[in-house]
Every structure is written in structure tokens, then in C-alpha cells.
Length: 115
Length: 111
Image (cartoon, rainbow over all chains, first blue to last red; front, side, top):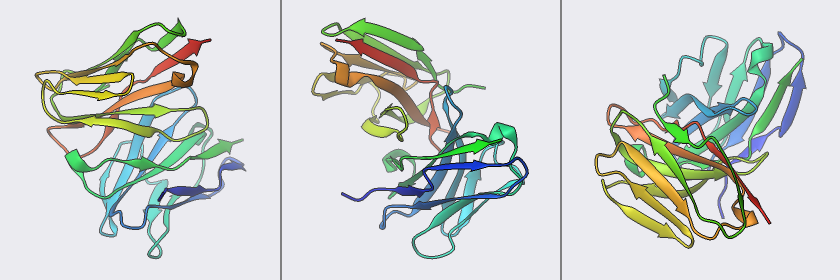
């Protein structure tokens, strides 16, 4: 069964360092998303991506964040200069359709710990 | 601003009991989805409800979408330890195309 895969599963970094989280969405999906979940808190939307550009982003997704689809399979989230409060579980998701019919399929997440 | 409020936030019950989780909003949603998330894993889709008043059943789970499409409920009959997890509703508001997650309900079923 097709699935969304994420790497690394866990990354520990020092504050101020750059981090890149990688995702391989399901191959025939066209819409890609990043969400984050701070420990014990709700799942928060970061950004959606379609047709090689950002289609929507939340207020969390500031200038420190960027996304890229460098090739036909990977979808990456970059945090340029990590802060302590960036520590969270980051989930990538993809969907075939958008809106009502766009059921999201999530990866298992990348846990980021900023020291 | 929290679009989707879930209640209760935490629920601990004995195996075999019934329970209901609520997802409420002041906004109208074009669809609502329910996900279950286990520790260390991503959310897994359980169901999508689209039509106001719609009821969907998934084995012992019954999902209902409110007539006004502002709320939804999840009812579990005869809960089992395997039902333990974080239950999340997620909706697409009429004003946009993006999924927003609810605050979550953490369910523990004690054997």
C-alpha cells in the first residue's frame, strides 16, 4: 500500500542551526502539506504546496521556513535558523485531490529537538 | 482562534463502555474528517463526512455530521483497549480549502 515516508525520524540540533526535513509523498498525489505538533498539543497547519508553489501558509510559517520540491519525488521543509520553540513533531501529508475530496495521508513524522 | 473545539479533552474508560467525542465550531465546514493518532505516529484517516446530517458507521464507530455542518460526533460502542489513541477531527471551512485540526481527544481504554 502506498505511503508517505519521512526522514529523519528524529533529529537533534543546536539552536540557530539549519534543518531540512524530507518527505516522499504518495506518487500520484498532487497536493503536499506540512503540519507540526508540539508535544501534547494539537496538530497545526504550516503550509500547503501545489504545482511547485505554496498555495497556502499559516502565520507559523514565517521567513525562517521554506519548502521545496527539488525533484519529482521529494518534498522538503527547511528551517533556516532553528529556535527552541521549533521543537515538535513535523508531519508531511499528501492528497490526490483538494478540498472536500482531498483526504490527507500522513507520514509517521520527524521529531525535531532543538537544544 | 480555534476553529474546531473537541470535548472532552481527555477520556479514560473501562473496556466495554460506550463513549462519545464531540467536535464543535461556530463556522460551517464543507466536510469533516476524523483521524486517530497513536503515540509517535502520524494521524490515520478514519472517515470523511460531507453532507449535513450524514451518519457513517465503521464497525463499532459511528460518526455524525451536524445538520448545519458546524459540528460532528464520534460514538464508540463497547470500547476496546485497541481504541486507545488521540482522536482528531479536521475540517475544511466553507471559506477555504485547507484542513484545520481540532484540539484532540485523548482516549484511554482500560482493560
